[in-house]
Length: 118
Image 1 (cartoon, rainbow, N blue to C red):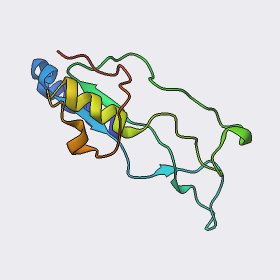
Image 2 (cartoon, helix red, strand yellow):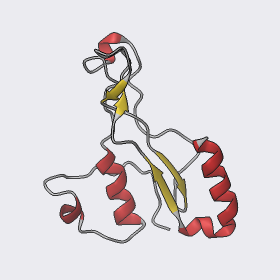
Image 3 (cartoon, rainbow, N blue to C red):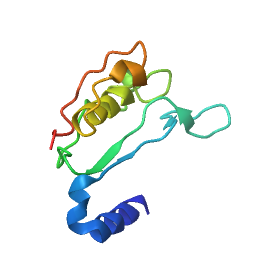
């Protein structure tokens, strides 16, 4: 459903899509191992999707730690990229705002080459 919706949005905007950047993310991830209630909710890491202008697309960015037990973080997917790195890069390169310390205080972002300036 998400893919279909994003595809329809992209098609509707057509050429205007180069001026738009969509970020999808969740406030919590999924666990690999079951939690106390038998579910996989409220895990640590998850995926972000970027669509639109300036996105360096066609590939997965980041490091996949795998699902082996020794690569998990207490049963959760191990975090490999902080969401603030991705959002900081978008804010800086696409919105032209270099005041990242005002947005993410006490955090130094590491750009991941996920977007171009133009």
